[in-house]
Every structure is written in C-alpha cells, then in structure tokens.
Length: 289
Image (tube, rainbow, N blue to C red; front, top):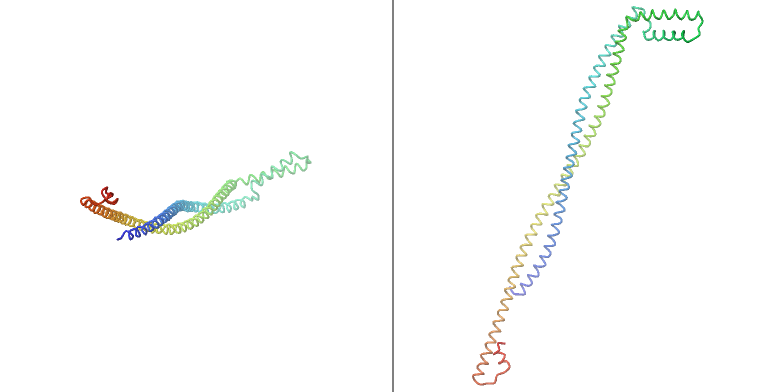
C-alpha cells in the first residue's frame, strides 16, 4: 500500500474508533441502567415475598383461631342446650311441688311482701284495727313462706342453672363475635395475598425482561469492545506500516542525496586533477553538501 493509502486507512480507522468508543460508552451506560433496574425489581420481589409470608402467617393464625373459637362456641352451645333441658326439668318439678303444697307465690315474692307490710307497720301511723289486720296478714304470709321451703332447693338450683345458662350464652356470643372478626381478617388476608401474588408475578416478569435486556446489552458491549480492540490492532498495524514506509522513503532519499554528493565529489576531484577551475558547487561537494 502507498503512503497515501495508508494515511487514508488510518484516518478512516480513527473515525471508526471514535464512533466505537462513543457507542461503547452508550451501551455500557444502558447496560448498567438495566442491571440496576433488574436489581431494584429483585429487591422489590424479595420485599413482596417477605410480606406474603407475613400475610400467610396471619391468615394461618386467623384460621387456627377460628377453629379453636368455633370449638369453644360449639361447646358453650352444647352446654346451654344441656342446661336448658335441666332447667326445664326443674321447672316442671317446681310446678308439681307448688301444686302439691298449694304454693301460689315464690319465696322471694312472699318475703318481699312481708318486709313491705312490716315496714308499713313500723313507719306509718295506722289505726289499731288496720295494724291488727296487717299483722294477721303477715302471719299468713309467713305460713305460706314456710310452706315454700320444700321448693327452696329447686328454686336455688334453677337460679344457679339460669346464671350458668347466661354465662355460657355470653361465652358463645363472645366466641361468635371473635369468629366473625377472624373471618374478616382471614378474608382480608386472602385478598392481600392475592394482590401480593399478582404483584410478584408482574415484577418477576419485568425482572426477567430487564435481565434479558441486560444480557443482550452485555453481549453487545462485548461485541463492540472486541470490534474496538480489532480496530485498535489494525490501527497500530497500519501506523507501523506508515512509519516503516516513511522511514524507507527517508532512507531512499538519504541514499540518493549521498550518491549525488559522491558523484559531485568525483567530478570535483577530476577537475582538481586536470587543473580545471572549481565552482562553488564543487567546493560544496568537497564539504559533503
């Protein structure tokens, strides 16, 4: 190749190298951006997975609590049914006892009436006749009260069972309310789990897309870098050839100049031997110029 051709090739290569360097920097920047995007998505997915585990744990906890509360509620309801049955049996026994002993009022009612009339006698200014009448009535009430003692145990037991029924009913209602609370928590947890799962699927898709883009840019970067290295090697090769070419031209020129000077010296020496007049050019030739 001629020196001109080498210079043209070198100039073209330098332009290509500048373009490749710009392209390499651009692709490298895009590659790092997509890598960071992939890592951000990876962190978001990890965070969502962590939240999903928390939601699952809450859901499982609510489900377990619902099972336990349902069992307690059912036990309370069974107990209420048993107590109501027992209460009804005592009710009919009380009714039978009241009928057998001609009891018309409960002990509580009779005792309340006695206390009322006794207070009336003590606090009000009654006539002797009315006070005597009330005293007789109180005596009748006491007699009736004594008759109700045969049913006292039944009434005490009925009162006790009634309180137990209310306690177990309240327990059942409390469990039922908690069951509904757990149900809605469980329902919300399922909804949250579904939402989080959808997000994870979406972000996984975006992460895969970002990863594939990163790999593509990484491969493209490597391809450009290889091309750049090849161009740099070619540039160095041509620069070396151009240097050698210039060196050869300079050497050839130097050799030509040397031969010209030698020829001039020979002519000047010939003139000197033949005693001819020397010119300035001849004198310069003797000086090696």
